[in-house]
Length: 183
Image 1 (cartoon, rainbow, N blue to C red):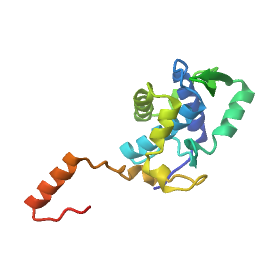
Image 2 (cartoon, one colour; image 1 turned 120 degrees about the vertical axis):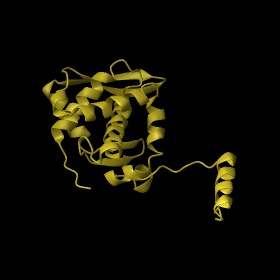
Image 3 (cartoon, rainbow, N blue to C red; image 1 turned 30 degrees about the horizontal axis):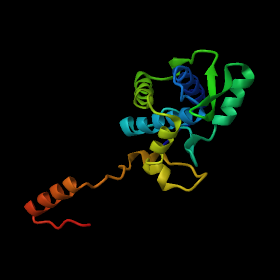
Image 4 (cartoon, rainbow, N blue to C red; image 1 turned 30 degrees about the vertical axis):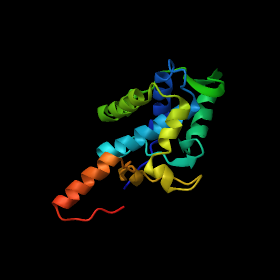
């Protein structure tokens, strides 16, 4: 997959998502990181290309863009964001608060739809829940701590859970076609 990193898009996506998380009590750094990841990887599944092209590394709390800290620091220094420390459910969280609106013109309509859909899907989840969800992504499971998660991993189907009903149906279909069911 030919991936081109666009730092301006990552900057504007950080601002866009930060602004959208303003009313989300769980909208700290962990949730921001995961939304960026899920947006880029969901867009790969839908279109074959990421939104930002950022490199995401595997960290204990889940994927995070490698360039996020330098971008965050530059945005703090320029006054475009503030960093607030808050307590949520007994945990300290660091929340980026955008002081300016993002420049949405750097995104096409399809990219914004992907980001908005990810935000909508994760709106009612805590940072811990979103982090746990990211640990079920094939790409996160595929690499070691600190390694880059390849965008191609977005195209790997997640592991399916077998239930008694799914095993019974698989056996019926296999019997119908004269096949043997494994495992």
